[in-house]
Image (cartoon, rainbow, N blue to C red; front, side, top):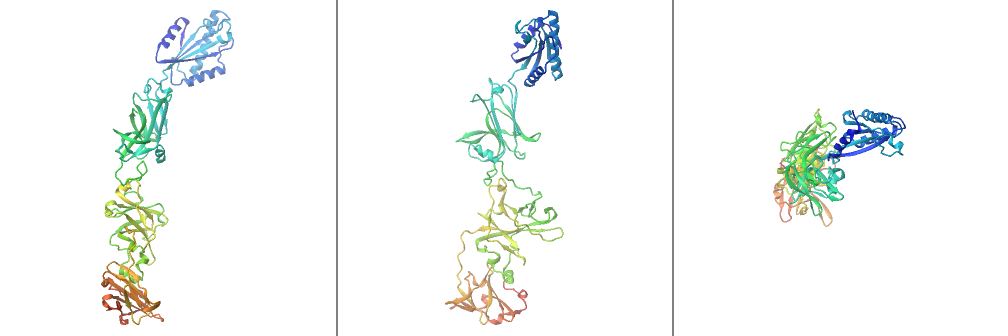
Length: 564
């Protein structure tokens, strides 16, 4: 504490006033007659001024005064006690002692004249403050902008209206009319967009030097992001490159940010070009990326057909199971001609879309628990199937048909549901054709024929002679198609021993399975090719003799060979 008398006070005060970097603030507190004790309201006044000037005080000058009642010497001592009372309180609330200068004047300065005795019983406190054009930190969530004083000369930061915000959702970007493309129409995705503006009395300001900007990174840290500035193009914000990289993402507390100097107002962003035209996602942050093959919910085949499993798709946890993804390019999981004839299943029953799809392969997912018991997926859950693009490069519009395994063990394909590829997910579409399908585990890949096949004419007749009430299945070895022949009908009358045969490009490729059961339960069957039968060209009729029939106890004992 410095005790300074009136003779030197004016010199010191003038030194403070002369500094162009200092601003002043002052107040007075008042005392009762012949007292040097601070009143409670005086302490409140001191506290409020200290809070208002926090961080800006260079010096504090405290000056004690009295009225003119009493002798000069007594009043000089009383003014000193009043100044010390204010000094002690300032020190008690944390003001450093070396920042406080103490003055006392007795009755020498009667600021309020000889009539203002109560008002002259006072302590005058004068703060010397830093320039109020201070460095300014603008902060909103993880967005930080440090504006150094003098950035917008001659305007001071305290008088400027700053606007600043960041865009962390697709909706926010869309609402701001921001497009994820540059001034030439090239498409990008972003990992962070911010807006910064400064105005004084409504007038736009331009920075004279850079601000330090911390732009929140929305997604994971990746290489290749460049710094762009926003440009208004027909009411939409598009992007112009600065040629500067966004550098690495830095950790700032709970925030991940790109940190850079920015000497502009308006929009800025860290952008990265989209990898391919297939990445048409409307997610400005890049959408979905290709999954890691080592992820816990991923299984894949040797040809890199990927299955991504939803949680709870099986009764057991995926980690506790053996799950194989199989590219069935030879359709081994489908029924061949002999199996169809043996099961008595026509193609339209197990594969209703046979003539509507050009099938390329099956994708089969087989799952078993630790005990080797097969497990079926929950059909109410959605499985994601990803096919490398080179696998379907010759297919204009690939689709998947789901299938379910029936009790007899074969797969019945669902012709009522075809699943087209899921597009515009993000960069995942650059590497893969993606399908979201029911988790049956059985899928047929192919191309869909939009125009249905023309009906095939029933040109020929099969006559079974004395064999009545038979079931006739016709299989074509050239395309593995099986149908059930209808009985011939002439003028409204059914001919029980005659069946209609459809015309085929090569009739010699047709195999017939005829099954007949007598009223007494005796079972017979015959497997023949058309070339084994007598053909009557005028009637376009093939004739089968009863002698070719073989007796069996049950149809599962049939020995079929001509269908191979």
